[in-house]
Image (cartoon, rainbow, N blue to C red; front, side, top):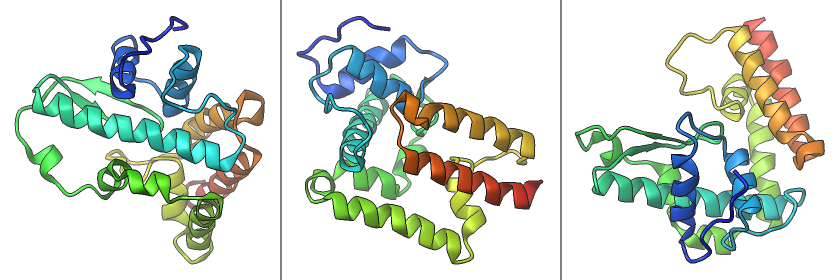
Length: 198
């Protein structure tokens, strides 16, 4: 979808417009690319090669997604499933349990102080803490988190993991605007998961 987005719309409304056009869901990366090609003025129109630009773009999109999810829930219009690999509008389900549960990610992304106060050193520390956990005996869990498979309700197979690996490599390849560091992280995680599931 390369149509111009309405510049007067809030980022959450621009995201909603794009999600209506993608009923099967869309990855965070695709959503960002569509916002850029639609000339959204709410996110940095810069290559995602710089870690800080990548963090800020990611934060702004996830802030909009969590605000949108709460609004749609309050209006009883839809449920918004949020994950980096698939953001999807789903039918509204009655019952407040889903949003009543404490969600630390929601709290993090709705606090704009986390956007304002995070600098390049902090982004480096976030990445380093991920890899420290990888080396500290939690490597399998950390690799599954990187692949967004840690909450999977189905039994994981190597075929499922390889399919997710191919998606992530395609999404984060430097030729497509991804970063070499992220690609190296994905490859490292795949090596670890092959040891456990191979």
